[in-house]
Length: 443
Image 1 (cartoon, helix red, strand yellow):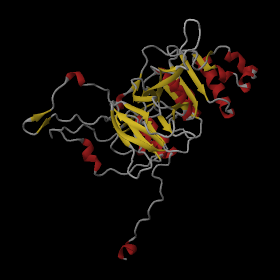
Image 2: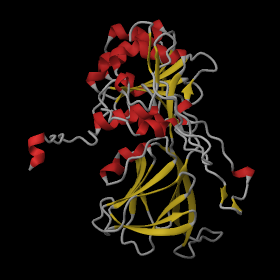
Image 3: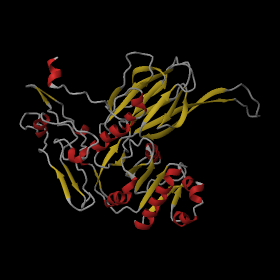
Image 4: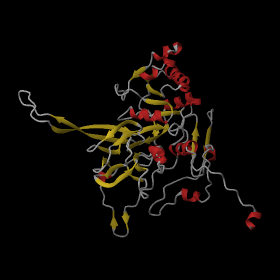
């Protein structure tokens, strides 16, 4: 694949099956004879259901030719019924299979995120920064505490490069309109951290697998120069990872004494309340748990203003499809592809045999509050950070954000996801069953 030759793996053309029966899908014709594909094989061994066009010359890698959207449903039901048309409620979404990165103008700046104080990342970090500044003439943004690492600040040879960097401090400096794209060096946590830095529009993120798990980091650092060059030139597949918009509303109770004009205290004071609201953008999950208390967590869960259940257990996880393969899957939830618009609700060790994880539409609004009879407070965290206590009267409102994280794919959204399932979580790994010989069949 280092040369400029064109490699194609062709398959039968695919088309949506028409709901009125007027068109036959090529997919249904090939499904009968489809063979099981190993996830560890290359694209040349892919199922005939897919067609890949791998062009190294124009950087058009692994373009998917079939849609990820389902077929448009028929809106007439039987001889007389039909769906009431509401043009104001129609939303057109681009097919995820055709979502590709392009630039309106050539990128000029890049944010490099490195796992703090990880000695194994020092050389890749330095090598990448030299390449970006010297070879690509990009403005490199680096967090200030990264450069405060003695292993970096004490390197005199690298000091000339660091003088060209632009630095920032988390929660103090706004870089939302200064960074064109992001490169992450480390594990999945670096991508979560990159998401937390941008509370609105997020630049495209290219994540290199230099951590422990690497479910969200599809790129290997060995060939970073060609891969970064391809991204700068544009035309790369992306997956839009939805985020949760979370609003925490807290009741602050203050006891204020009543004082007369002469400054004499008349009463012990009245209790007054004021509300404080904080908003977060969450990529993986919102976790509400019982904290240090030994009592069951007891929280009410509302959906669009209606109480749907009371969670009695260790807590509850509200996750995005991206977060479904994190804490949620460890708590027994299903795994959802990031292109599926949904929110997953997963109880943590519920004191009930029938409380199963559920998936709700992405557009609903969830609200979590302490139950009136709760024996203790609860604690909440957002992607494992910003942990805080939730008391009576506080509320957590959760819905899907309109600011997703555009994660750059190594191949395409489908292959990258299944590759991560196989390589990181060893999904469906089992010793193969032995086949029966003709002698065995006789018994």
